[in-house]
Image (cartoon, rainbow, N blue to C red; front, side):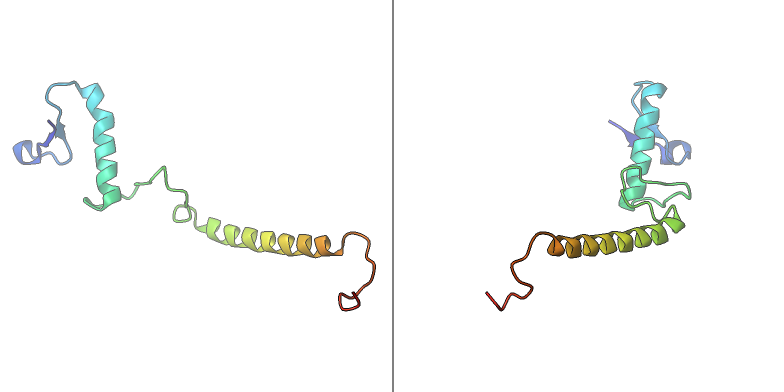
Length: 99
C-alpha cells in the first residue's frame, strides 16, 4: 500500500513503498507525478510534457504555422488532382446536355 509521507517527514512528492526498494519506486513515482499533473491534481511543472500527446504545437510554436501551410498545400493538391481526374479520358461530346 503506497501512501504519501508528506505529512510524516515534510518531503513533498515522496512515496512510502513499503520496503520494496528504491530502484523499483523511482519509475512508479515519476509515473504517479506525471499522472497527477496530467489530471490536474497537482500543479504542472515547467518542464512537464505528455509524451503520448499527438499535438506538440504548444512545445513548438512555429509548428502551428508550418502545419497550416502544409494543410493549405494539401488542399491545393487535392483540388488539382480532382480537376485532372475530370479531364482524363476520351469524350463523345463536350456537353452533358446533348446525350
